[in-house]
Length: 253
Picture 1 (spheres, rainbow, N blue to C red):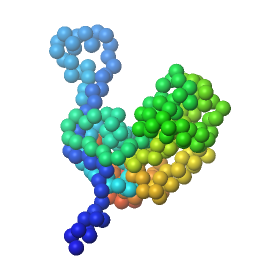
Picture 2: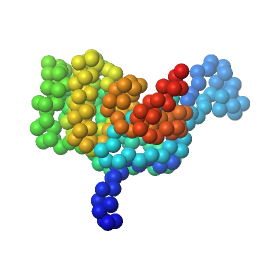
Picture 3: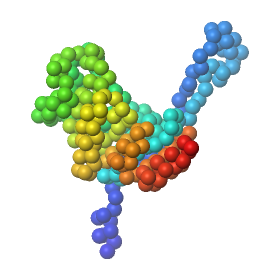
C-alpha cells in the first residue's frame, strides 16, 4: 500500500528554501555631499541595502503551473532570476532539477554583433541544445519567429519585438522541463502574443512545469493553477491562483 502511494508522490523540480537576497542601491548626490560623507565615514548615506527576498521558501513540483505575483519591488522577478541561475542567493538554497529555459530579459544570451542565424546557434547552445538539435529545429525556430527576412542581419539592428520573437522561439524549441517567463509577453504585437500564449498552453498540456511573472492577471488566471503572492520580499499567499489574484485585487481597492 505504501509503495503504491509513493509511486504517485509529486516530484519536486524547483526548491527554494529560506532564501535571502539583497541589493545595494546607490543614491544620487552632489560631488560635494559624496566627498564630505566619504571623509566623515558616513558611507551608509551614499548607498543603502534593499532586501528583495526575505526568508522565502516554496517547492514547485513537476507539471505545476505557478504564477509569481506582486507589485513592483515585491521580489517576484528576483525570485525567477534565482531559479534561472542568472542571480545567486545571499543565503538559503535554490535547487532545480531538469532542463530550464525561458525568457527572463529581452535579448539575454544574444550577442549584438552576431546575426540572427548565429544567435540561434549560440542561444541554443546556452540552453543546452547540441549543434545537430539546433540544425534540426532551425527552420521551425525561424518560421515561428516570423523574421525570416532578417535572420542574416546583425541583431543589434533588431527591435525589442524582433528580439522577443527569436528569443521566445529558440526557448520553446529547446523542449525544456521547466519554462520561465518574466513579463516578456507584454512585448511585441497582439497576434504574436496570442501565438506565444497558445504555445505556452501547449507546453502546459504536455506537462511542462511553468513559472510565470506577469502583471496581466487575466492571462495568469488562464494559464496558472497556483499563485504565490509576494509583498516586500515575503510570501503572503501560496495557494490557488484565484486566491492569490483575489488578495492582490483586494489590496488595490
